[in-house]
Length: 477
Image 1 (tube, one colour):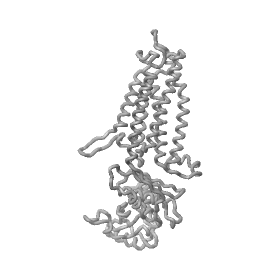
Image 2 (cartoon, rainbow, N blue to C red; image 1 turned 60 degrees about the horizontal axis):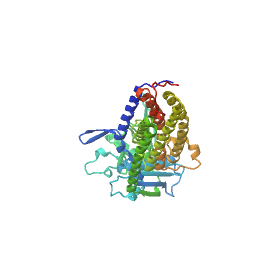
Image 3 (cartoon, rainbow, N blue to C red; image 1 turned 90 degrees about the vertical axis):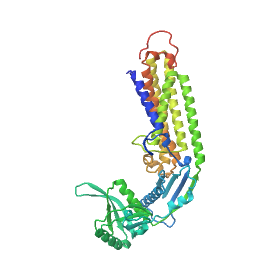
């Protein structure tokens, strides 16, 4: 057996302690009254609508709408997103269910907002968007003027289709663009507008309601109704602009299929109660683990703290490769369940170690065999739970999530059922299982075997065995 060196415990312990501190407390700097968040902590968690309160609404095309395509639905989603930003609602969830032609929208409101009218907000989100092309752009507006003071060139009804694509520049590089195809009703007006804009150097701006979404310069006269918008686009921003233009020219209106609100007071109370229960449970479990398993119990508590911190980090967007996640009450339940699995993993391991010590094994031999025999049982239980978590994320997550894509052959038989709160349970459970392998198995093993190298920790009683009465140090088997 390869021995773990003495300094390993201190290295692992310091890493877990530092990581836990920053994952919980975060790190921010201030320049005057301006705060810059470098590392998000627990206080920066985005709470879901079941905790902060908010709106859950499903839109569908009106009954007179025919031949609604997936691109049309994407365009409508883009319109709703634009209106969310206009209302300063940035913490929203919008999903498109292409099978049943639905757009599911969820967004919370601030807990201290007493004037929020959810029905009016839903009505404004579902109204047909007003897309317009106008001479000039926002920089030409004087104080007190609005976009309506700019000359109207085209409306959304004059646009047949917008499509993102790319073209090759003279230097050979690819440039992302947005191609426009106009109806006959807009060709002559656009020809006249581009002629005047080219001669005068004006821009032709594109507006969604009263929000300017693009203001390209005109480099050529467009006479055939085929225009190209170029600029500093990447693939994503070009697709976003095309979706907004298509959404603004949709020939159908959205109707509310279902609508519900959730009280923020009940959600906040449930969150605080579950958080308090989780803290109390963690403290009681820590005392019980230390009392039953002594030194390995202390190592287990340290690892469990790292596991909880890792879960918070996965939620807040601590890691650069992972975006922040909206936490719901079932998500908190997933964290508690994952911690319980972490405790179970340490119990199984420590019981195996105690059995080996009682069978007469030395400390080194008992640790090695105990960790080895416990791994298979821990692995089986965690893999089973991970599979369940992935199924929950695939069944109740967004249709374009990687879990849903993997399980598409199964779920196409049942349709999509997006439910963010259940998805949060699967997410925190899956994260907890992965972290259990890292902290509950690896770090616990490294710290325990590292401490066992110190003479002061060579007493079998510290590991659940009988008290050592004779001198000597056990050897590894």
